[in-house]
Image (cartoon, rainbow over all chains, first blue to last red; front, side):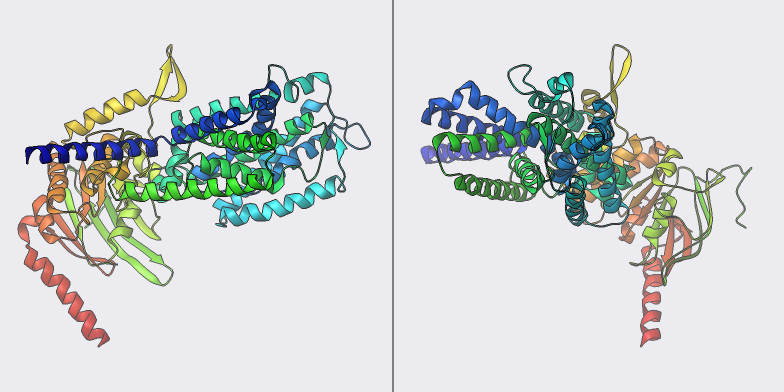
Length: 347
Length: 265
């Protein structure tokens, strides 16, 4: 009897430990995606020694940089309870504006390249502002607002360059800062890391971050508390757009040309996928920048790892699909358990 | 009878005069005048759709009245926003509590009043989480609100705990006039008792005046000094709780119900 009792007790303990571990797992979503990333690195390293060569790591960094920059912005917008589908087109728009401002006449206005960058980023900010104003003041769901903007901007981009690609303007210093390989990785990667660190701090340690979470978590409550929910959203739309534009400018420096169809829906959906895999809720109110970044790293490792192993590229989309569905199912189910009060109560 | 109240001995914390509010064809409030004395707990009752929430939303600056005047501490004001009302010491605990479920207790308590850190004597735009946690902990303990962990997400707490946090948050923000929209809605007996205790404690300390929207008339007599009955956007009863009873209130509401029935039938 006593034995059976203690057995039941220890069984209970194991169970509650399991629940608590699952609760902690749920609370620290970065941890789970980090485990996945490390697991993938180990897997690919064992399968092919080429995986951990310098060239591969550089490749991964190149792949990660632009997507990570966009993911940072997209995570903020998603936490806010909105989505930005147009950022992939801003990725092409900003370098085009830079070209029109800074390319030598008669193609461009011949302004200094720095001014071109500023104009490119201002154009991106204007797009974000428009997205935000239409969404918050005119009450159009951001999915629709930014879907419209996606098509609109593509039209602008194609018209501006008449459908052709052009050479990226700018001198040596400019390229060093935005496109070269100063320390191991390309500078865009360092910019992306900087954005991740800064925005993670903004998210968890500033008023802006808390208000962003509050707006996405309970928009009415946040408004009643005095949070300016409209301008919080508008600000994050602008941030997302500008990060997309900045990434686009740097990518155009790296590949030395500007294309009207660069980026687009591919890079935008990769960013959304990375955000979701990294633990950001599509329903708003929760998410992390670091998780999103790790999500990008996982996608990059998968992509480049498959190339190295000589696995068909078709499998890449297949795996991303499964990863997104898996992450979302986990997200939703864990949230449901949490709400039932079975998880994370501690004691 | 209802002057501006200037120069009186005891100035009302809140006085509204001839407030009306329409939503399209719906008449939510019609020429409502009421007042709240300093340190008083006023119960506001009435059937669904009687205009209680609208009245509270107007006093809290969330909605603007179509016409009428509002006096805070004897001075006429045009409440521009929730923030403006709050700057005058008026704070509201809404039915939905304005808490963010996915956020920690202490971040909720300090929402929109976050404390910033200092670095070598200079203010930095970074949150001082440690200080906020400490103060939230101390304050909730003082109020007798039992929350095991201020780091916990609000989603993990019970209804009573959430309500307590919402009330504590308002009082902590130095609110002098507290508007509670159905503080006991959907709450068990035990949880409700917690809130009633908290309200009594605040009343005895005497620093805040409160308007409570209540559904349960028994609660009115437990904590309120005075009661106002709203019916179809008009105040039809204004008495100290010592001069009325659950029966009288019930009778008034039932009579209204019968009138509506015979009117439509």
